[in-house]
Length: 95
Image (cartoon, rainbow, N blue to C red; front, side):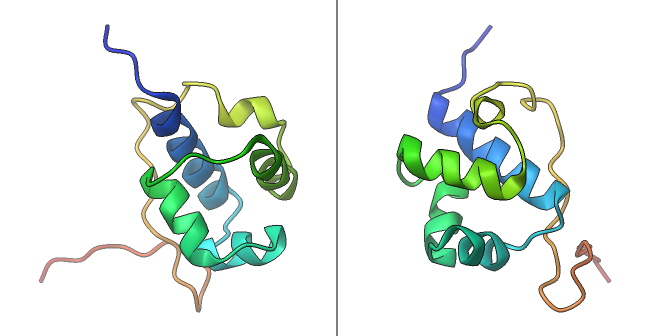
């Protein structure tokens, strides 16, 4: 069994819980006092997050911080993006 890196686990979990809460990256960034680019970079695994910021993100998502470190969603399909205007899931339609 191939182990995923902690960075990949965290990026998946942040995105999963953010979308589950119907928050855009901009919403989460504003509530944690970060930039949306920072949240985007975290969700793409560009860099590591500090424990302090991880805890702040967990607080905004109203979850225990350890949930962002658990490898529970490796086979889970992350829902599509949230539309910033309607706050609903965007669907990718191919015409």
